[in-house]
Image (cartoon, rainbow, N blue to C red; front, side):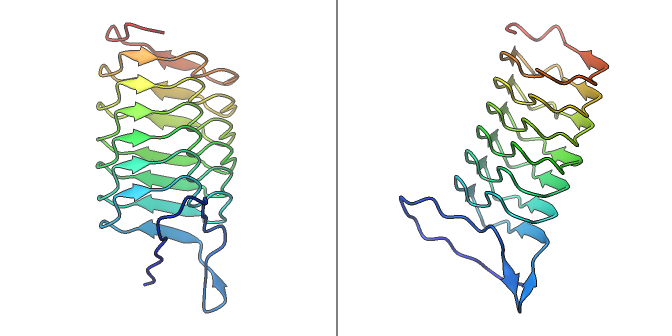
Length: 173
């Protein structure tokens, strides 16, 4: 087990490549006592899997942008996913969004070109502009009754999207 601490700073800090005993860490598990993932914290990282612990309530803008992970598990405690948080994660295939997420920010998962399916939890109320833009492998998505707002171009350039059901709860598209 290794604990990495990032001190508060006005300069964006990131952990692109994390090594322990000269071995590249592939699986990132963010511990339960972490409450917030800073902007650019893991920008351009090479982790193959990311599990976000139960203490995290917010994933900041660009936190994992352009990273190489194939699997992401977002805990039930996360309330908001910031803009560009996971965009350009082109290897992302498996995405589990926890039951606490209410807001998916602009471009949050844009250009995740390997993502084929998304199951949104019943807690989501807003899907931001271009949230899933250019997820070209995306075939289906289940939008729960809790969603009231789907912002512009949320599924733009999702050429393979064959199934989407928009519930009556949506009052703004």
